[in-house]
Amino acid sequence: MLKARLIVDRDFVLSDLDRRMFGAFVEHMGRCVYGGIYEPGHPTADEQGFRGDVLELTRELGPTIIRYPGGNFLSGYNWEDGVGPKEDRPVRRDLAWFSTETNQFGTNEFMDWSKKAGIEPMFGVNLGTKGPDEARQFLEYCNHAGGSTLSELRKTHGYEKPHDIKFWCLGNEMDGPWQICHKTAEEYGRAALETAKVMRWVDPTIQLAACGSSHRNMPTYGAWEYQVLEHCYDEVDFISLHTYFNNNADSTAEYFGVIELMDAFIKEVVAICDAVGAKRRSQKRIMLSFDEWNVWYKTHKIEHMRKPGWPEAPPLIEEVYNAEDALVVGGALIAMMNNADRVKTACLAQLVNVIGPIMTETGGAAWRQTIFHPFALASKFGHGRVMRTVVDSPSYIAKSFPEIPYLYATVVDNPADGTTTVFALNRSLSDPLEVEVELRGLGKNRALVGATEIHHSNLKAVNTKDAPNTVVPKENGDVVVDGETLRIKLKPASFNVITTKAVH
Image 1 (tube, rainbow, N blue to C red):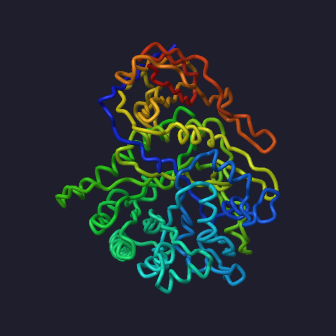
Image 2: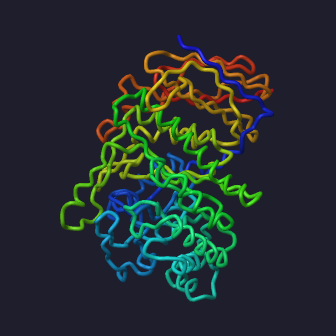
Image 3: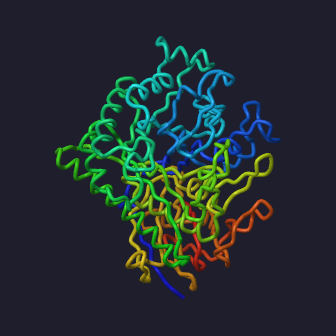
């Protein structure tokens, strides 16, 4: 049996864990909005057309913040189209996804939905076809209390109180040639600076995220971040990162390497941000918003884009996730928690149907995909502070990353209730992993609160409408608590969450 050690000490804390790390993403793309969160006439729909079954699953999933309305869609979006009486809203052609947008769901509907879901909104402004003036007008409509034309317009739409949206993204993936009105780093950096300035003048309480690279393999990666921040460093709080994992090699051992690459991506962007800060002799530190991440590689083809018709809410990139995808998502969550000193917000993309943890049948059922479960566990138990960990584990060599430890883990301690949670991934495909965990100084007497594992003997197993519980969390009975020490047996290829509590 493989053996590993995991050590933490109460005096060595990495950072408080920002709850915004457990965010998600809703874009006007495919069936994420229409047929996903919004479907008037569905048997579970409420008076506003919000699907009750999706709301219930969203609350169970536990996202804390949701990015809206895009995505590539954002770069061609007129926010004015999605407010006011629905019968007066224009129907548009969406050039991002070659679809027809009816605008029956917009800003105010999203705000109503997010309140019912108990979620903080994260909004984006269009810096593709639009610019600073539209951005500050959109912000004024949403956040200004009253007395101006736009705030009074909001009131006529039935929203007397301002929405008070605190987190705003300055465009989306503006480094990408696929983006509507793609920009160079110089062009975008200047636009981001001027947009941030006027938005802060409208509401100085907001937080702003500038666009980083669309992924780590972009030819402009690194130079893009540096040049953009050279312009807007003093006016923004975050820079974004986007990444999508793939198993194109159809090798789970290689697939696990993407988790290490995500960690490297984070550390590289931190270094670039700090280089710009150092050049400016600035005490300010730019934080990271990993506001698009997920597994996505099985459904890249978007067939209707090659055909005429401009359909409404066509099924797009509806990835069906398997057990190994769930393990990678669990590992990605660990990677972000292990960088909690700089990753302060993150969004699993997307929420429903479109590469989503929740799947629906239009007019019918909704169910949990495999990746639903590690996210829900992380959100449920990810409270408190992330500890600095020392991991001693055997490893293996792969092409995707030179050395991959079998044990990948993080520890989150919650002084508020005395609980300490170990998140652990065993990346061995054949051997159980016996892990000795030392929780030094976190309470000499501890009791087991719960131990949960995600494991399936068939790594290609999926959840479907007819078999929605094929891959689900189960109890791990191989946990022994001995004072400050835990002895845990992890099944091969398993994601585990073990919580103990200090007792007196």
